[in-house]
Length: 224
Image 1 (cartoon, one colour):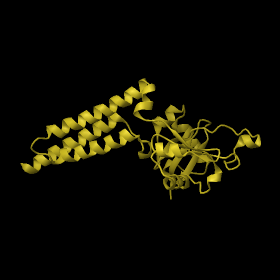
Image 2 (spheres, helix red, strand yellow):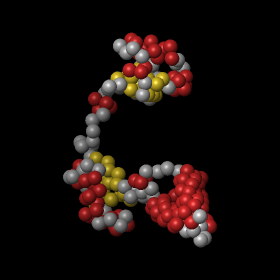
Image 3 (tube, rainbow, N blue to C red):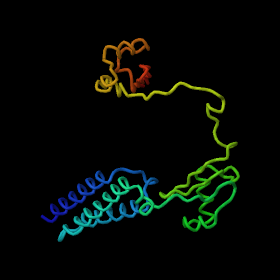
Image 4 (cartoon, rainbow, N blue to C red):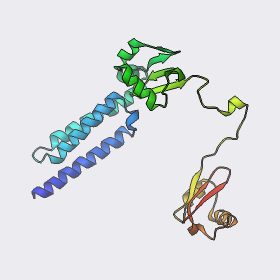
């Protein structure tokens, strides 16, 4: 009976955590703001407590729901009322611009020079002279704008106008034709099988992965 209770409470913890994560939404760790970060840790800790709380599981369950609701409401508030973002999320801080490092802004961002140098190196800049502007974002990342002579070459610099690239869609995976994807693109199995044979394959079973773009260009990867 005790083991069954542990299983049920643990299952309740996992389900609650899953539902809260779905409601709050998905973000990469680097995209989390400070409040999202601490609430994520707190909700995870409460979930662990709920999984082992056999006597009064209702208390940690309610706490999880409250934290999840507060996080969701704040997300809705910042979305509908942009002016609240500055107060809740904070604002970006310019750390360096035109070769000048702003000491006051370093203190405001709670950074020291060593940490700033580390973040620059993580972005691929080992020489500060290559940096035009460095901005410390509210999610804790450093955004760097290189000086004009150090930025990557692009087609505009060479007066070129390349054709726009099209998004490719999977139409074959593990030797199986993905009919729904084909239909969404206005194509059918007959067209696909014809293209497969024109590229020298016997059937879709010889293909590991196949992509088709909006221009009906088919790219196939052979199954080894």
